[in-house]
Length: 270
Image 1 (tube, rainbow, N blue to C red):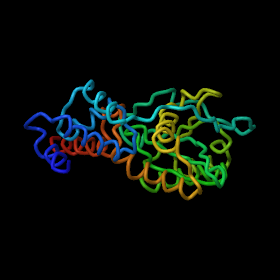
Image 2: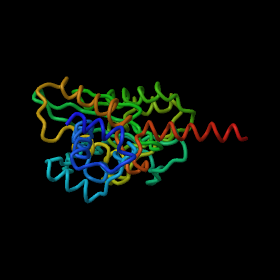
Image 3: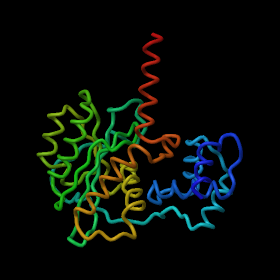
């Protein structure tokens, strides 16, 4: 079995893979992704390795060997918009395709259950390459949770003035402390319309993927165990390896590297 796996990696481009070789590759990708991929992403992951197989064949082998991508489930809404704090207009208006990095960031919060109680995760996505540029976890869903996530994002990217920060209209994002931090970073504020999760669809989708691929069906005895899982998913898998359909099945880091390379080529020509 070991030699079949080696042959699949070294010689797959020159000759067709046997079912045994392809199955070993599918099992390796399944383990690497934490069971995240269904057949469409499996096919893309094979192509990224310079190999090819039909979707029907991949589906058959996955079915025969019990390799299943995790299914979607609903999760609780955490937005607390029943407050009297000022809210911003929806400046983003569902324009989720900025033309460059550090133009639009979107943010949100979700809750995660452990045997020790709830743990809350706040993330900040750069909508250009869907990378999690900032994140924070706390046992309380307060303003400090989202301020910490924004602070990480700002420290990593140092965006120019004028970046558009979009979130829901929850009390954490509407708080005076968070709004003051946005002004300090010279960012513009945009908020979803009341009760309209589609106005922040990319971040909602990210949480859905995280919970489906790492949380549902698992038991977390401690908050620290959940923190370790979140770190692995965000920093090791999602940003650097996970194939995103909105990025033509490239990872956020790969997408950014290719964009930066194209910018350097354009500058050299100019």
